[in-house]
Structure formats: structure tokens, C-alpha cells
Image (cartoon, rainbow, N blue to C red; front, top):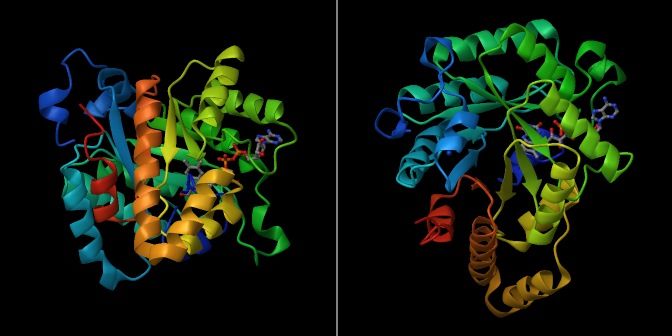
Length: 330
Ligand code: FAD
């Protein structure tokens, strides 16, 4: 979520528990698949060979004491055979080493294809290089290249590195030094909140791909038509790479209201009315039932309409994601 991968102060995102996932590699990847040097696999290659798929996004738990439970959640969700799992990254600096340690363990101990999110706002080229070198040593071969958002209380000089102002700068930087890395980028079906216009936002998305991005993961959305329109507009502009829709289950009104206030996504009025009614009738449990069923219907329609797969903002919740994905994939 970040997709809701969110467009906000990362800690806040983590605070609401949102920030808001192969074992199969050896047996399922055809021998003809293109590997980068050293045997690394790019997620874009995996996408080309396995459709439909799901991928799972996690956020680093705040406290180390929560890590055993977190890795228990990962193990429960590994049974879904996700194409890849991704781990968010705090643009403000708070969770960056946790991101590194978690993707390392997901790769080494859990046999998952892990992707680290990485933001460039407030970062120096040296710090980015150090992070990428450590990823490489850990056998992590894919990165979601993001700008990030400066923390709300950041000093004016926080975002001073002219070399790395936008995600496209980060993509260019990574491609020049790490040509083998798989690179995802973020896309916004409802347009990024700071964009000059939907058109300019799409042009900057194209720039990220022209500079070397392999695929797009979208910000969360609740109206599939916004994804269908986004894909059509992107294709008209010449963007041909895979566009993976990001879907989040609503688990409570408080959480979802916080998320949409942060990332600017809109909830259809009828769906919000249904959630509010459920809240009055049966509280949080009823809201979650409606929210999970809605996300499952969204995912079913997206896959039936040709989306390559579904990226799920898991909220680190195994129960919710296992329920959501029941019967989703063939
Ligand atoms: P960019 O692509 O750089 O775009 C940012 C804004 O600048 C847009 O309005 C764009 O139109 C505009 N723009 C782009 N290039 C230029 C240019 N050259 N000149 C002028 N304007 C330009 N945040 C985190 O902190 N950690 C995470 O782990 C995280 N994960 C995410 C995962 C997903 C799937 C998504 C969708 C978002 C995630 N985010 C995360 C949030 C993201 O960092 C924010 O949405 C941020 O505001 C924008 O990042 P971006 O990479 O899309 O930026």
C-alpha cells in the first residue's frame, strides 16, 4: 500500500498496518526463460511465463518482537504460491534496514522470489548503492523503484539530491550501475495526487519504463473501470509493459478512511454506504466480510478481463488474504 504503497509518510502507513508475495522456481520456470547473469530471475520474466498469478505485499513490523508472528504469516501465505512477494521501504529512513533483512530472509529461508521497495527521496547515491549491493549479496534480484514522500516533519534540506528527485531518476541510476536487476515502478489509475495532469502523470510513467522499468504495479483502487481506463490510456501512449493491478481488502472503516486520505484513492459511494451499513449492523467483523468479498469480486473481474495477475496489499494479514483468494486462481 504502499500501493497504497501509499503516497505518504511511511511510518504513518505502517502505523495503520496497511502499507499499505518460488518455491516453484526450480520446477516451474521453463529452461528457456532468460536469466540475468549469475542465475538471477527478473519478475518481468516470471510474469511472462505464469498467468494469472498473485503477488503479495508486506510491510516490516514495527517491533522485532513481532517478527516471529510475521514470518508465520508469510509461511501461511506461501501456500498460495505467489509469483513474488514485496516488502515496503520507509522513505524517511525508519524501516530501511528492516526491509533489507526481511527480503533477505524471505529469499534465503522461505524460498520466495522477494522484491525490495526502494525510495530515492532524501537519499544519496551512495546510500542507494550500498542498499543495492547488499541486496545483490543477499540474492535479491528485483526492486520496486519509487520516489517516496518526504516525512511530514522533514527539514527543508531533506530532499536536496538533485540527481534523485523522481522515481525515473532512480530507475536511470539503477539501470546504469545494475543492468541485471529486475525493476518495477508505480502507476496511478486515479492519477498521482501531485501530478500536473493525468496526461503528464502518464508521460512520466512512460519515462520510468523507457529508462528501464520492466513492469508497473498500480496504486490501490476500488473501481475496476479506473484500471481498465488506465491500461487503455497507457497502451495508447505506447506503454506496452505489464500493468499489475494493486488490490486491498477493506478490513475496517478506520483503516480504510486513513488509507484513502493518504493515497487519494476514491471509494465508490455505494460501496462506502455498504461498509457503513455493515459497521452499524455488525461492527468491524461485518465490515471485513463485505470488504474481503468486494476485493475478491474486484480481483475476479480483473483477471477475467485480462489483467496478468493481482498484487495484494496483505496488511500482513494471513486470514484475510486466504479468505480473499479462495477460488480466485485456477
Ligand atoms: P514519481 O514517479 O517520481 O512521481 C511522483 C510525482 O511527480 C507524480 O505526480 C508525477 O506525475 C510527478 N513527476 C514524475 N517525474 C517528474 C518529472 N521529471 N518532472 C515533474 N514531475 C514529475 N512509498 C514509500 O515510501 N515506500 C514504499 O515501500 C512504497 N511502496 C509503494 C508501492 C506501490 C505499488 C505504490 C503505487 C506506491 C508506493 N509508495 C511507497 C508510495 C510512493 O512513494 C508515493 O506514491 C510517491 O508520492 C510517488 O512515488 P512514485 O515512485 O510514483 O514517484
